[in-house]
Image (cartoon, rainbow, N blue to C red; front, side, top):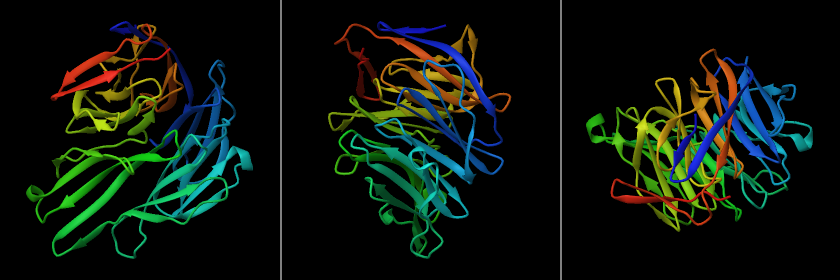
Length: 355
């Protein structure tokens, strides 16, 4: 079953099973005509891929012991995987035979590539000796990883605290990056405190939404994305999924698009969001949320991660049987120049599908 909104049809064509996994730690990237997947299973990190027009996945490649992999693809279609093992962040890449390269200390990393080939790594780690995590940053333009610099310093004192986590990064065409995270401001009591799911645009305008301390928010591996139409942010809080989009340097405002959790966003062909609602996978196309269905059957699963190639969409998720699976679409765009408008929360969201 497809969804038709203002001349746009999204047909989910297939579901492919990659294999059994014992964790929710996995990631997806589309590039070089392939779907690239990194995942954690049995205390190890693996990589597999398949051509977008092929039906078989490559034999899983054991990268090494580790957890929480993040994957990105360079301009030549080569895959890079960052992961954590024993308190150190490593990167391995197809181009160097998957040899692990130590980036530095940390507990969690998010990897992205920009249009000029620079790789950006946002890391959660402790870099000042206290017991509160910082958000660090390292980059690699081809000559090795830079030293980790602190972007946000977690700290506590005199009953007040600032904490940071759930970081997600996306490269942008010009060589820069954007990132999402949850910041926490502790004021001494829960009623005096708040958490802020946020999008950070270095050198530009950011966006954050205040939620209650006990409510909090959940940001996925793919909580932020950048494309020709702007920057998109998606997260869940209090049982609802929220999105915001920056176009032409301005954020249009936070909007709830449905009940659910595990939201991820893609901006390769306008705004698109995948999330789970009570175990049912959902797809928001910038106008409406509809169930993800293949051959008339709704897909069931958790933690969907969305990525596109500018034409088709791909969602990686863990199905009800615990298997890592991928579903994909064929998108039929409206005639060039047609815009869709959503009005909500006092803001208009414009989304254009390109052929």
